[in-house]
Length: 171
Image (cartoon, rainbow, N blue to C red):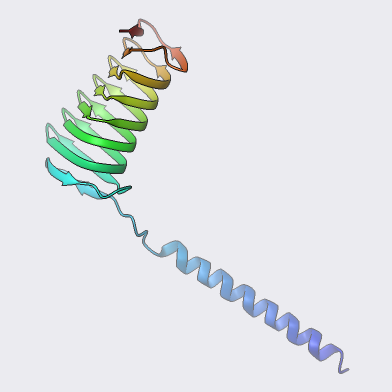
């Protein structure tokens, strides 16, 4: 009988440890992330700290974002956005104008009539109609939609198109 007691104690210890681990993991899942996105909805200025996220929403607003941002999310129609640089950029809407003074690691454009200008873009994915991308340095490009225009100095490393009347112009 003495040999059963240590085995039973070990089993209880493992069970309690497992329950505590699940409980701690559950607490971690509901803990708010330390990097919450700054949300701007009526236009204005914001300065990013390195890696910080910014969410821009609205209709016909104008935003100026300085610094090295992590993720920039733009959602709305008729927005004008000027920013320094971002690790990634996601734009969804209609008739938006986005100007990046420096570089964007990756960009995802969903909508119609969106214009994106940057010094360099690592990769860009375009879904929609009549969008325009201009960047002297451009990595990979994926286009889904019609009447989209891509302008760059050198041929992108990868260029895939699904749609009609899309153009790639090497300047």
